[in-house]
Length: 374
Image (cartoon, rainbow, N blue to C red; front, side, top):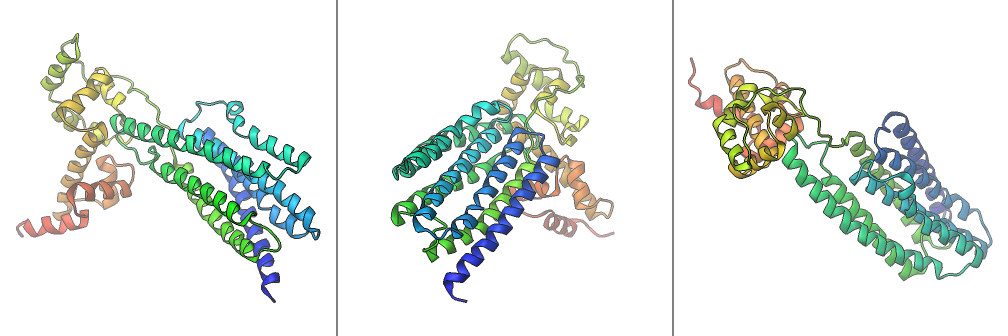
């Protein structure tokens, strides 16, 4: 079998596998994980993307070169509808439930118009025009979303005690990667005056085959992330744990009140940090105070974000429990993570190493050496 036969066969096989996985992933997401708009948006994007891989079968079955080129261009322009779907997905990811579906559908109108225009006129300038528009729109979207994500993550640090499934750092990497792919797409099109799935270009067929496997990898990565992704909600505790004896009239007065109640001792006594869903609002409600005053107090007096402040208590609790392990009276590492208020063992491990520069197991060994034997 020569390369002219091998490449199309490999392409069809990889395209078929990719299509099946994308359809299966979208069905799974719609059936089991459709609580948020960004999950539904990604499910429909996967469906659109799966149809896009069908173009490999269509183009390779057309023998007439002119017809194949025309159909190929229509299918490539359809791929830009998928690009619009990705734009909708990342917007709903960063701003869950903020934009209506119909408003977000505006992303797709330029691409639908481009397909119709090319189908009627066959004007070759439609494709570069679409590319230029997409690069400009993607550049604006990139700056806006990255700025919004950084602002959102800073807000989380000041309001949430556990950000493991709330922060969007992974989304920054995803958005930048998608932008780089778009730049590469434009550069390849300009250099070769064509794109993937051209029957006479073995190199394009090989690259399209590799793209199938790349697509599978990043789709599985996104699926895993958005299934676990949570949306920040600020729900106060049902009733305050204490009632301040004073009713301050200014923020400066309230600093004195918070100092008087000895916030550190109170948190240790009540063990508020053991609540894995603890937020600034919850703690403020427990204390019977205003969340903004409490936030200002922690930032100014403790020189920490709320996230850092609460996790310091959790880490100190973890060390206390680890000391119990050296005396053969403790729990498993997973139990210690949970009892300390961490949402997962992985988060506990990461935070422990970050603060103390060693793993919990190393801490236990060092502590046991310092503990006199009986």
